[in-house]
Length: 154
Image (cartoon, rainbow, N blue to C red):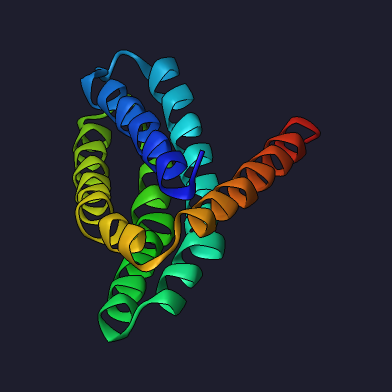
C-alpha cells in the first residue's frame, strides 16, 4: 500500500470513530471513554506517520506552496493534539459539554482530512514518483507495526 492509500485508510477509521462518538449520548459514558481512547491512539499514530514520513518528503519535493501547506497541516495537528483533544479528555463524558467538544473535534479533523485529501495528497501524487510513495508506505507500515508492538507491551 502506498503512503497516501495508507493515510486515507487511517482517515476513514478516524471518521468512523468520530461518527460513533458524535452519535453517542451522555448516558453512554463507557462507550464514549472507549471511543475517545481509540481516537487518541489513532490520531497519535497517524500524526507521527504524517509528520515524520510524508510531510517532510512532500515539503522537500515541492516549493513554497508545499512548504506553506506543510506548516499549516502541522499547525492543525498541534491544535488538535495540544489543545482540543486534551480538553476533551478532561471533560466528563456524561455532560453536554463533552457532546459540544466532540462536535468541534469532529469539525476540525474533517476539515483537516478534506484539505489533505483534496489538496496535499493530489499534489504529492504529482510531485513524487510512484516508487517513492510505495517506499514511504512501507516505512509507514513498519512504523505502525513497531508502534502497535510498543503499545501492546505497556
